[in-house]
Amino acid sequence: MKRFIALILLAGALLPTLSGCSWLESIFYHDPVRLDFGSNDAVETPDADREPLYDVNGDRISDAPLTNIELRARSLSAATQLTAERIEGGTLYAGNLIRLARVLKRCEAAFVAEETAPYFSSEDSAPKQTPRDPNVDYSPVTVGFCGSGAMAGEGVEYMKDAYPFAIRRWFADAYGSDNFNFLFRGVSGSDSRYGAHDVGRNLINDGADIVFVDYSVADMKNPEAKETFEVIIRRLLTAERPIAVVILCTMDASCASDYANELEIARAYGCPVISLRHAVAKELSEGRFFFSSMTDDGFGLGLNGHAFFGELVANFLENVRRQLDKINTDADIPVPAVGLTHCRYMNGWLFTNYKRPVSFGSFARYGLHYDVFDRAGWECTVPGGAPLVYEVEAQYITLMYWRVVDRTGGRMEVYVDGEHAATLECDFIDGGEDCAGYATVCVGDEYAPHTIEIYMSSEKNKGSTGERVCLLAIMTA
Picture 1 (cartoon, one colour):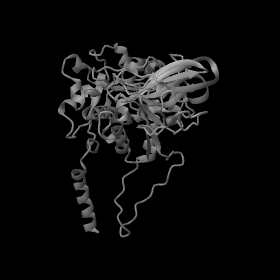
Picture 2 (cartoon, one colour):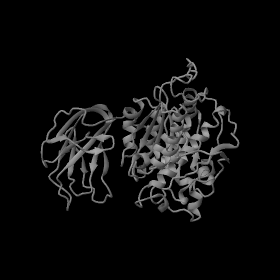
Picture 3 (cartoon, rainbow, N blue to C red):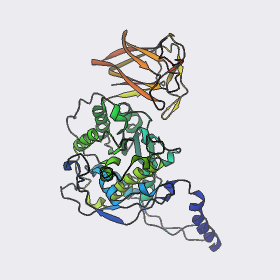
Picture 4 (tube, rainbow, N blue to C red):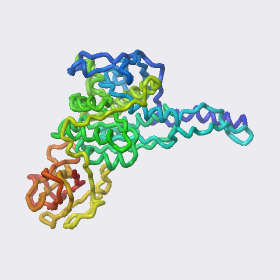
């Protein structure tokens, strides 16, 4: 038996050396550092946008203990390691911690147990089993992720090195359990228009307990960003079983993001905001930080950027976990009776080729492998062929289509109730990579039945072969 135990210990000592292929394997937490979440003059937002942590009685939580995670991964340069300054600046808005604390308290009650001696064989006495508390929910906690770009793993070769997996690792490390369900719903190139229509199908219906949301970069080009982002937050918080929400803001190569709109919504709904830009705001203003230290391709977050942001979010979660006893989770959390925007897509829905059309026309199911749209779209290679026809009931109709940079993309003509509604250009001549495009083709006065006809046009962009078009999804509300 002693030899057996010795072999087990030796194997445990060798495993890190043999398996160290990912920075995630080296995450560990040290003693907390004192941070006060004070104002940051380097940020162009007013001081009111930076708030300290408060409990439900309005009392400030003094000396909030945050962990200072040491990044030991060899892939990370010293320039991207966390510092107390960066951790402090990264929490742009602490929000109302009650929803998040409820989830973490459930994790504490269900998963954190006293350590027992190793049990190897019948020669040893079996560990004493602690009876389960009938008042504790021991079912798996479901953690969801929705967003685009970095949330979908852009910038790293393996998804395990993307920042959502650092958050996943924190849950496992903090609670010593794998009793979690993780819903990775990030879609490259999508913005919050997609999320507003799909959050019900892919997160609420799948039982998410907490959702991390990041459309901060993609929404800079979304003309409806404020409205569609609010719809995501409002739908999550008004679900039959309210869901905790943490808003994440990454940034593009110019260190910009749509944080201003998201912060306004966060303050209205009490959701925490963790911002990469604000973590390095002072260094940016002093010329001590450059985006090149976080990217591999000059455009989006690379391995260093993902690692840094993942640890930034993990620090915030660890901070809240260490002060759960100060947060009264029995208090009510009101949701604003009226939204900041029209919230037109509150009952939005998204469907792909799983919904049978009235007529397939010259379209066929598409074999595209694109995040959650795995073989889920419609493709046509017959210019001037018969249309794809759908009948839907809706007030608002938005189409999501595939745009390609290899100059093979053609055009789709869209008709709603016999009237020409839009021309969808699938040749992404000015794009850096293939991605989704969006077009709102119907804004009605009321909820009513509509007929959608989609043709592949005989016309095409100059220089494009125009040999294919692809419809990814139809979004209705």
